[in-house]
Image 1 (cartoon, helix red, strand yellow):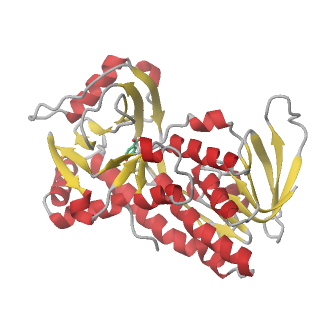
Image 2 (cartoon, protein in one colour; image 1 turned 90 degrees about the vertical axis):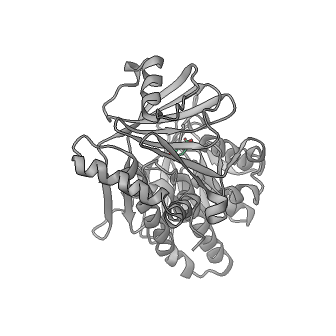
Image 3 (tube, protein in one colour; image 1 turned 45 degrees about the horizontal axis):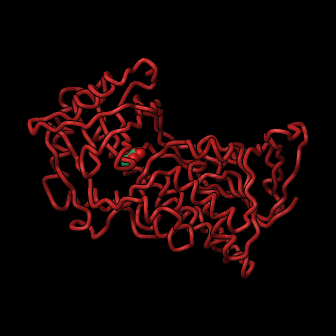
Length: 396
Ligand code: DHB
């Protein structure tokens, strides 16, 4: 099989790229090892910057985001038992939209199906071929029921895109003496839950407490998403509903008497994370986008937004190449993308470090961080600095 652009990975990055290319008449095929069912149940963050929303609504993927997406005007930074509201429209003239990443996937997959896109789920890439040639490709096999898993197929393309997530197969094939993997590990993870309960607060709460970080997020009027910092070795099954609720409540308690609204917990997962960047993000005619090239810790929800920003730049470069045959923009892709990547890396690292606690922290360090939080919430410039980064930088 052959196509102009081969895309490995049918998450939001791969599908959005496929969608934008198809709209401009550029042939492409998307392969993903996972089933549609599996991806649609992969719970990730839920905050979209306005440019990410626009990419969906202005290109005909407006299925349900208008109805189910929830515009948020700010966040509540809570520390020392007190809430500090950052109001984004007033600070930086922007808002964000709460819409879960798995819903973005469902909408994009539906748009590709509607438009006759060639998206093959349960299709595993076993090998990446001829990275340094002008006709790279992949070998793949179908894992679908009834397919013969020993039957290996080949896909050849002019450009190959690795949008296959943090454990990217394409990234592995690109590594050479000139590539660098830069990373930072954190000694904690998140315990994430979904619960049947009403909203506890109009805005998301990012809380720092001596017991650790907690995030009170939402999914709808009746389903809530919450997280708390935990040990990476924590076992979800060791935590009863009561134990989870009392841990979350302890971390948001304060003299104002704030109380979480509780209910049955129907999903619980321990989510490890790290900061990671592969440089360069391309080699020859092979390009990485989204988590395949870089991952951020979840605090501040930059992952999907960063993936969409990559895709914006990459789609534009591919369309210029398809139109005129010039590779200038393709060659500039990674410099443009990496400028935003490192700003997002900094922001996600900063939010994570400022809001989590460490067992090895000195009394000095714990007290210093409260000074840092006060210098954010105590000044308009401080709040603007956080708000600008949270709502997203202008396109570069
Ligand atoms: C969510 C996750 C985040 O990491 C974040 O910063 C905000 C919201 C969420 O899942 O709703």
